[in-house]
Length: 381
Ligand SMILES: C[S@@+](CC[C@H](N)C(=O)[O-])C[C@H]1O[C@@H](n2cnc3c(N)ncnc32)[C@H](O)[C@@H]1O
Image (cartoon, rainbow, N blue to C red):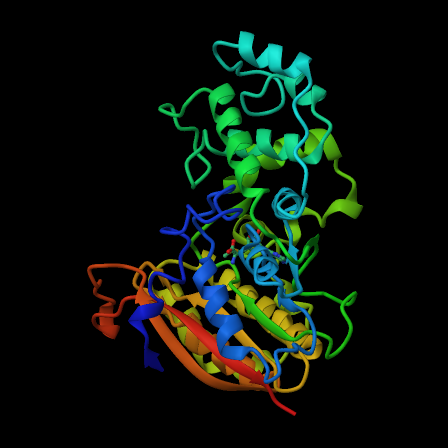
C-alpha cells in the first residue's frame, strides 16, 4: 500500500466540471478526466499501439470513454443504466441541429415548469416534440440540473427553460472542440460481458459502486424517467434495474444469490466471516448478505476483466472502503485479494484519500477512516 495524496483529487469528479464534454453531466460519483489521462500515460505500450480498446465496465457518466476519445484512444464503456450510456454516446455526435420553431415557442411561453408531464417537471408537449438525440440529451441534462447530485429536487434551481438553453449553448461550444475518436458505451452488466472476446482489451480503468454509499437508481431517476418516455422499456436497451450493483434494496428482501453461485467464496471467508460476526454483534444483520453479495459480484466482475484483458495489460480499480456503523470493511484489501485469486498480480494499492474526516473511532479497531484507493493489477500469464 502506498500513500498517494496527489491522486486524492483525481479519484473524484468534484473539481472537473469545466472540461469540454465532461461538463455536460455532473456526476458526483465519477472519477476525473486527469485520472484517465494518468492511466493512459502510465500504461501506454511502447510504440504507442494498445493491444485493444480500453474498457470501463462501470462507465457511469462515461469519463473513461469520453477522455480516451479526446486522446484518440479507442475505448468501450459498459453501463447498467441506459440513460447514462445514452448521454455518453451523445458526446460523440457531431451536429446539433436548431430546435424546431414549435419547441422554441413552447419554451419561450413557458414561464413556470409544469409539475405534471414526463415524470419530473417536464411538459409532455416539449418532450414529445424532440427527435434528435442531442435535443433529447439536452432536455435530460437540463432536468438533471434541477436535482441535487443525490437525486433530490432542488427548489433553488433555475427554471427548466433557462437550464435547457444553457445546456444547448454548452453543447454547441463543445461540439466544436476536437473529438478524434468516436467511442461507445453499451448498456450491459459488468458481471457478464460474454459479448467481449477473450484477451481483446488493452487496459481497464473502472470504479464499481461502493458499498453503502450511493443509490444509482435514485440519483439517475429524473433523467432515466425521461429516457424511458422516448425509448421505452425495451430489454434490448438495458438489463432490468435489479442487475445493478450493489443490491441495497434487493438484498433486504431477496435471499442471497451467494447460495446459488459456487464462486471462490472460501478465499475471502476469514475476512467476510469476521465482518459478518461484527455486523451481527452490532445489530446490523441486514448488511451481512449485502456485503457477501457485493464481494461475490466483484469476483465475477474481476473474472470477466481477467478473461477479457490482453496479456500483461493493466487493471486500475478505484474503490472505497465502507463504514457500516462501527464495522469497517477494507474494500481495497479485499478486492486486491480477490484479484490475486482471479489470476491477477497486484502491483500496488495506491491510497488516494480518506473518505471520512475527521477520523472516526471504530470500536475495537481504533481510529480508522475508510480509504479510497486505486488497486493496480496486471493480468498474470
Ligand atoms: C462509481 S459509478 C462509476 C462512475 C464512472 N467512473 C464515472 O466517471 O462516471 C458506478 C456505475 O456503475 C453502474 N453499475 C452498477 N451496477 C452495474 C452493473 N452490474 N453493470 C454495469 N454497470 C453497473 C452504476 O449505474 C454507476 O453508474
